[in-house]
Image (cartoon, rainbow, N blue to C red; front, top):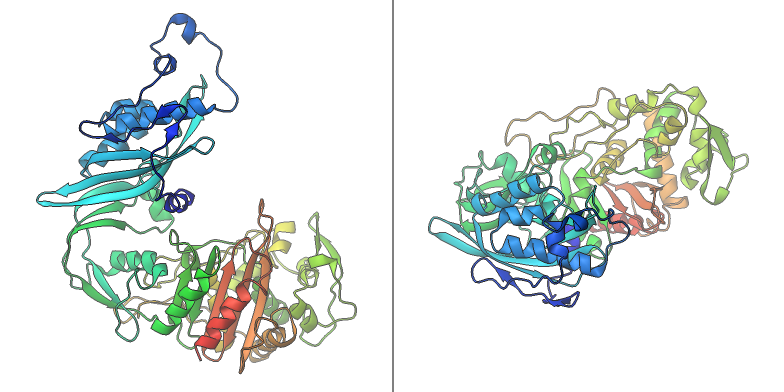
Length: 556
């Protein structure tokens, strides 16, 4: 994903002078070869003298000349169609040769022009232009990619760090590029009002449309065309990545699939995420589970549906429901909120080490007191939170049938300190905005309705069910906790302009190696529920909160 994002920033680069050698564009026919000065290239091939081969293993950072020479060697050979020579310039010649040969044979890409840009450390971005041909159909292809030069294990010689993404930034291990009659016919996706949904109009929907085609292409009544596409391998399918169309050579006849998306809310969601970096959001209808909007800042991955992130304190909605049911907390009763609480060998603390003296559980929930929840860990079994998430909120069972690939949340059974951390949405707990919007929707509706993008009536699939509901008293307390948080707690500033029957919960999730936490926010208003995350941005109330609140307002 990172390579693809960077590639988008390089489209205006031009051939430059690299390491004192003019970077000549290389082509499949009549290409201009790079000049390789000195004996370095021959020595790397193992064709140098005995004394050269006996030199000590090269170590230390790569020089600019080493990076440039290795990149030139690889790109020149690939552009000239010398696949084995190009593969030999990598640190995994067998895998490289297989994919590069398939690039010409299966993807049917020829007349390559590879144009490198200035290297940045060991990375060399480059643009790719070529022609995709199939029988009488043919179209130009252009995209950006990047390669990284590393020292080969054993002798330290500079080699291309072989990854499938070198060939195309969207390729993962085991994926293939194939040109031919499409495996599935195209689909025309419609919003709930019958309007067409396109990635041009709604940029966030690219991966969603791919998923709809993969699931409904054969069922929607269309006919396949000819296209260049990524056919996903085993590992990508485990990650629930869909096959992806890169270039359409001849149009097929699409079938139609109607979704539950609201055109006005989808447009509003697109606008919200466009104003932020690494933001994702989902809007649901609690009474039915219909998905009304889904949007992501990044176009490379549908974090809103498939992300797997620690949800931070938004998880306290689920934890609070469990503590209330077990008699370990009650809305208006006194509840401990000390600065610190140690459990399982870890010392937990609150944000800025605050404490609430003689406070109620309601006050602790509204201020998002970590120790108020972790202090109850000694009274819990290791699987209590897992059961609560599965049995009441329908999470973590990998059985949602949304209509496109999704990650359905994970609340693994843990012990000691990680179990305590799970109570506040850290540890092994993983969620995405779809999951957390569903949590708020379950609180509002009083029962879990599995979210869906395509009505189950279209294909007769069965939606997931939760095995039980909360008692009337627990549900009433949970709604009051979220309502109080929206009016007087950490969500109050974001929800200030949201009127009516409302509730909310903020969250901040720490991530190793990240200076700022991921900001989370989940909320409901009337028959709308929404959740969002802004990664590496800070506290949820000030980052994801305004985004979610704006969508609740936009929904009327």
